[in-house]
Image (cartoon, rainbow, N blue to C red):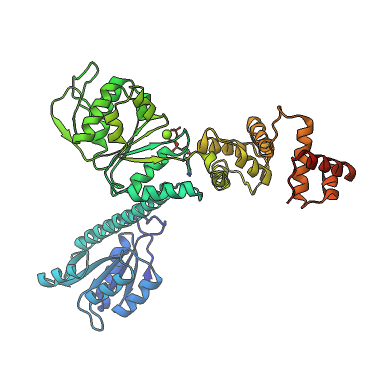
Length: 479
Ligand SMILES: Nc1ncnc2c1ncn2[C@@H]1O[C@H](COP(=O)(O)OP(=O)(O)OP(=O)(O)O)[C@@H](O)[C@H]1O
Ligand SMILES: [Mg+2]
């Protein structure tokens, strides 16, 4: 192998992304032709290697990754087409140009069929060589960009893929439900308290449907005034109202083929309710100020944290629309109904925010976990996420501790703890608190008065005296 490393001006050969010069392997059994090509291409700024036959060429390709293989067709030992096939097997990205005898159009066609990107006819015209190789290089570049773009997109998709965390039975049946209904076009209604993951569920429905390559469009219905909401949903024609200077497509058109997520559906006005009902019944609508009927293929997913049934009873929400929306109903369970998921979610958020804030958190104190598990989470997963984010930001060391939690949460969780014991503070007498302390400790020590006394810091006599008292009062049941 001979590698010519000319340091000439780089006319057509900018560097590869790896910051080395672009490489060409020249293969020709004829030494003069080989040498001339090496010289020419080195002058063009490429790094060039050469080989006298196909076997040597394959050996070089393995050691010396290059962009383009420029090979003669007719060679003893191995012909150029066979070489291209073998080389491509090992590196499908390799650019290949074949040199054929003048006038043999058939062989040129055959070369292209065999996978060559281009061909040159002999005797060689040096300008043509430069041009064809520059073109082959461009094609390689495009192929590379495409490949890395694809890889990046796939990675991004994997990263942004929605995950519903939780191993509790309510979450497992939620995920099973999503799997089951994702593929249908039927409208889905998601209900649940604030922060329970309604939007997450909507995104997951979209990702698991056949619509994943089409848009997921979210519209927050409570955020817009009635007239704006209408044109946002259905679009408007030019001049439909003051300020409508141009025609605009609405979210329904934007979501064509995909999913339209109508968040806070409970807030929409009677007028919009009628229009939405028509869409759900007929799958068509008109833009505001227009009379052309437009039909789109959109799956509607709606969410609300209001009690829509009550809204229907109160006459604020159309019953027929309610039934149309509610074809499939998914209920997002509140976090307090699945305290077992709290540690998992907490650890997930700790990792997420530690990374985001460049903190190195190695440990979460066990009492932090049990405090989080006891808390009743009125703001559900969102509140947990916020609490953890705050704690992570406040942590100076590597361990998350109780003092990093909000005081109000600690107080409430403490009340929960006492509630579990059957005493309330304030609200319980000291005697009741003492009774619970003694009975629980006695139970926990497996019925040892000595240990109970030790743990509570009182005398054994006192423990025994109290136990007798409790038995007599019937508050202590012996097994
Ligand atoms: N099971 C879960 N696993 C992981 N993250 C979750 C889960 N549930 C909720 N979250 C996260 O909690 C936050 C709140 O979720 P989301 O916005 O979907 O709630 P929501 O029900 O739409 O609330 P709201 O009614 O207030 O709009 C988001 O950051 C979401 O990623
Ligand atoms: Mg939401």
